[in-house]
Image (tube, rainbow, N blue to C red; front, side, top):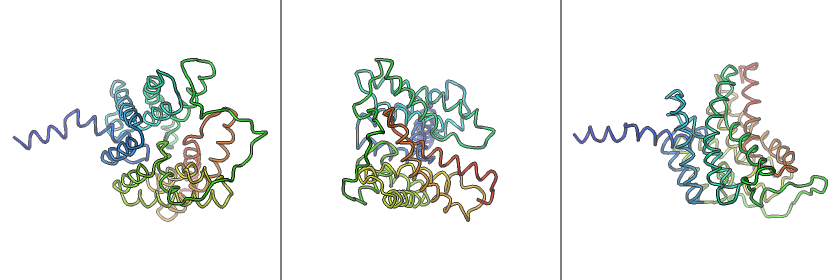
Length: 314
């Protein structure tokens, strides 16, 4: 009787839904692991209780949209309808303000799941993964709506800036330890050392390759941005590291192709490329007051994965 009860508890519809939701959180890091998702949720909640609540609610919403829409059960259970919703919910919670910003964030999470489904269909024939493009485009559009719709109120941090008077700020000290943990933390918009530690535990739990490549990707981004003369406070806040980590995960671990010979090197190239893309995209968006989000990761990964279609030995 106890075995039957234990099995029903771990394999029932509620447990399946919770597992899919936690995987939706872990899929932000291209990881399919419910316990890693739980650790990531803990890392986010450690930094902000509100963000923790919005994270799990956004993951729930993404899965509910998938189920209501009749999506493939395997895709739902793998968390593929949750990760864009999670990122959208977190981003809009942080970048919007006002009494109803959390409602807008949850609505955005629902739209992100629909957008994800649409992009899955559009990109199916290309063999290129959707990644986080639904989150990026949707978040940008909803933030830009603030200039026309009073219900959308931007935080004071997102201020359009004039490039004609722009100057690089080289003040600030080098803190390599803080930069290491902030790099992975910024994937979830976190600037908290303990959260960074928990995120590293989450990726190592999913597999030693994820943990190793997280360290390598972040280190490559730190060194590259430092040698290229990046602004120290941006480098060590992790704003050059998070896209590099995601790119090396995608290219060297998750979508590594048939050849194991060039995978690690291609991932390192991709991590370096994200530094240049981060600087350029952030500059391009300054007049609009928009953050770069994970667009450097998407562009770098798409570029390298598409190149493999013509250069299969890579």
